[in-house]
Structures are given as C-alpha cells and as structure tokens.
Amino acid sequence: AQRVTQPEKLLSVFKGAPVELKCNYSYSGSPELFWYVQYSRQRLQLLLRHISRESIKGFTADLNKGETSFHLKKPFAQEEDSAMYYCALSAADKLIFGTGTRLQVFP
Amino acid sequence: NAGVTQTPKFQVLKTGQSMTLQCAQDMNHEYMSWYRQDPGMGLRLIHYSVGAGITDQGEVPNGYNVSRSTTEDFPLRLLSAAPSQTSVYFCASSPNEQGPNEQYFGPGTRLTVT
Image (cartoon, rainbow over all chains, first blue to last red):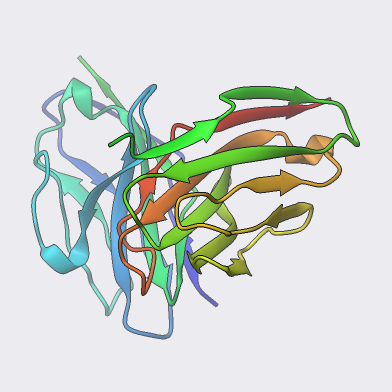
C-alpha cells in the first residue's frame, strides 16, 4: 500500500536550533517525494522535491531508499520557519500526503 | 495570472443540502485535484482529473461528484451534505499531465455542515 507517515504532530524548537521533520513512506515503485509547506494564512506551496536535490530557505531533504525516509532538515531554525509541513509521495497519478507536522520556532 | 481560484471562501450548509465548490485555474494545467484537510488527517485526495473529460476517484470520493468539461474548471459537488463533510477543501492543479508532482493550490474553502 502507498502510505506516507509523519510521526510528529508538533515539533517545537528555539530559534537557532537544528530541525528535523521526519517522513517515512511505503511504495513499491520508484518513489518521487516532496515537501510542501503551509504558512499561516497562506496557500499550501511546494518547498522542495527530492529529484532536484536543492536547498530551499536553508532546508534540505535526502531520500534514503534503504530506510524509506525523506526527512526534512535545517541546521538553524528561524522564527519565520513556523508553519505546517507536509511530506508527499507521487504514486502514479496521485499525490499522497502525510498527516503533517506543525513546526513552532520560539524566539 | 490569478493561478488557482476557489469560491466561496466560507460556506455553511444544513444536513442534506447540496452545493458546488468552484475551482478554476488560468495556467492551462492539465491535472487538477480536490483535497480535504482535516485536523490530524492531513490532506486526503477526493477526486482528480488528468485532463478535460477525464476524472477519477481518490482516497475519499464518497458523497462527492466532479466533472471536467474544460481545462480551466473543476467543480466539486456535494450531493447531500453531512456533518462529516465539515472540512477545509483545497483545489490544486499541476503542469505535469503525467502526474501531480508540483501542485499549485487554491486558497481553500472552509465548509461547515450543521
């Protein structure tokens, strides 16, 4: 079955601390994975995709096929990173989302 | 470009009423989809379309109908509203006709069914 698991509903850190938002997936094919972000009062938007191996707003995510994970990391959190983060898996013609992790960054 | 637009922004229905949530995009995207967002459940796919005239069911299609008569529009119909359909509904479109990968989301419609 195709599934995306985000085990943490809420992650709270202080500004400047490292952040890791966990994402695990289940998929029999070759996975394409994404991180989407929803800031307060804004639309859900794409943050990054594994295939481009890019760093956006200081965030990176590496696909680990052995552990079936795609964790999102940032070495130094900023207050403006506070948002809802969703991991998503492209499975054929569907995009399957995890349940989301709310990141709170305190000053 | 307006991107993906949704109307209305808010709606309150009584149980048993029907209504249509409107979604339009002006980016000439082939792929469009509808999700509902509920606390603790993330975004769940209701229906999607890979092009005009083609629709398919997602994870939670029961109680909803869609049609895709044009590339631009993808309305979602609630046939007989139930309290369980209280949710925030998002429409999205993607330029990739082979799949949803990078999706552009609308602002959402907050629906309450009493």
